[in-house]
Image (cartoon, rainbow over all chains, first blue to last red; front, side):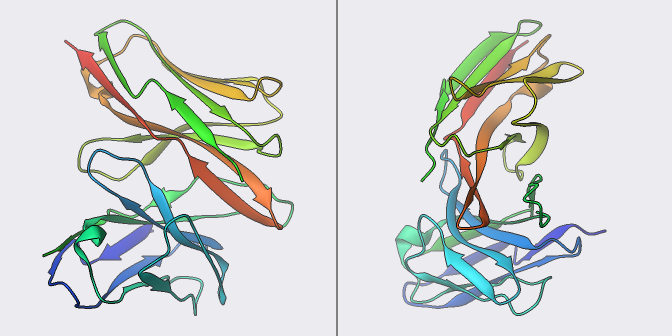
Length: 116
Length: 114
């Protein structure tokens, strides 16, 4: 199992450019998440998904979009990049069964994004 | 929604001493409480977790306690070692609208001084 993988590892964008951060998990997890972590700070939830075709906003969704067409993939789209989006982005996944038993989140290695 | 407060924000201990990090949560419906360790430049990784039907859980030098009545849970690290230096995050998981929602604390930077 590769677990949760993210690409790219690093990226520099110019203001106004767009890009997609890729996230894939091979653990058949139903839940997937996108977080951003600013230097020295905690994790802020951007978007999450409870299964293919279902997504919802987190704490800081403005400037981002997501889609979940398959169980494995959960890409994050940045439109019109701004310096405030400079951060480390973590994708995560977890499994919750129908009885509502929740389990740990597995995180990807992160994407370090700089917007200049 | 859920609100998780974590204290202290920074903690320095001498090697071999114990470290305690405390978290409080607001929603009594939360029923799963994981703790994650994040080393510098790395991803967060689970170190221990506890469910609401258990009051305490131990794994070698690490233990977590949960007080549902007071809505707080704590991480205890005994015999600290330099490799324990990292940022630790607590989290509370609740059901909202039939879906799992996870709220993280703001993190505690632990420094173990050799």
